Amino acid sequence: MARSAAERLALFESIRDKVEGALASGAPVVSYTVDGQMVQKEATSTWLAELDARIADLRRQASGGMSASRNLVRFRNV
Image (cartoon, rainbow, N blue to C red; front, side, top):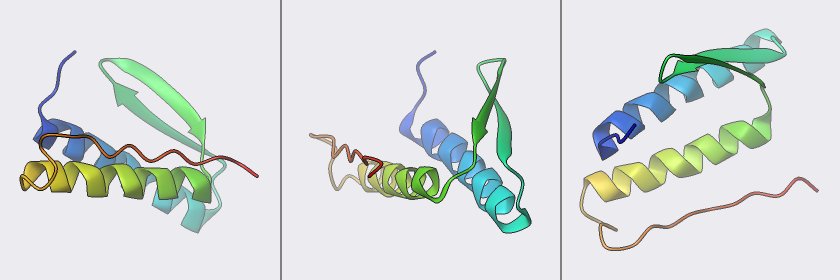
């Protein structure tokens, strides 16, 4: 399903809030729904950092800062 940048931003911010809450409370898994599908994933600080980077990118796109190109950031577990 195609989403606007604003919809993607809202989705990622919602997921980020859940991950942050899970890390703060010690919950091992985050559950959320995307396109009617339930997703469960381990809450990690790496995932939180990836979400922060994606949210920052979407905010730049929404403000027109990087509308012509995408700044995709990949993190590796080391």
